[in-house]
Length: 271
Image (cartoon, rainbow, N blue to C red; front, side, top):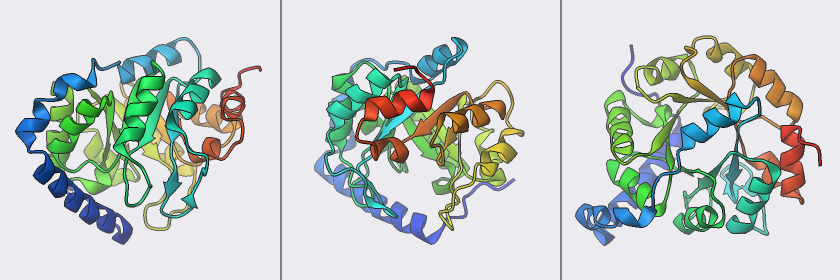
């Protein structure tokens, strides 16, 4: 079994830039000083618990993403207002939020997470490239209830360390995979939350067949999240038939003028 990822050129550049950013953050605020601020994040809201409860009630558990831009598409939403978007998503029936904080590639910011979480009572995922335990502690200080661990960026040892730190701080972790090798490695981790991303990291093409193929290999005791390529209520129904219990959707909703109405349409909620 492989214990290290095969990283695409684009992802390698992102990780290199992220490491530089981490070092700058450590210089500005040493780890001990960051740990002293842990009380500022409030109590974790229970990200996995919220998804499980929504699914148990027979509803679609949506992780709605607040995302300003992407490397491939550029600016997605000019009138970008994280608190208003958080409120719109909640009104539309979202279960949790995902907030992009990566700056160089997604035009994100830590303040977006703080503002979005303050606006609603939904659990929040910090969507960023997690490479160092420092970032996990930082995420809790910012108020994150869950962090994203991308197996394509991490060795097995790194993933275990990051997940261990998140667990100690009461946070959940979404373990993201893109292929069979990454899934095999992810299933060695104790997190119940597994995200299958339908986007090919090398070609950036999206295919729902990725989820359908990999989902068959995931035990029933894991909470499967379908990511990327989801645009309609029919897509959610299709993914549900193949084992999805939650759905992470961002760009397709962020491009809509009426985010609340678009979220309700996606979830099949009558206006």
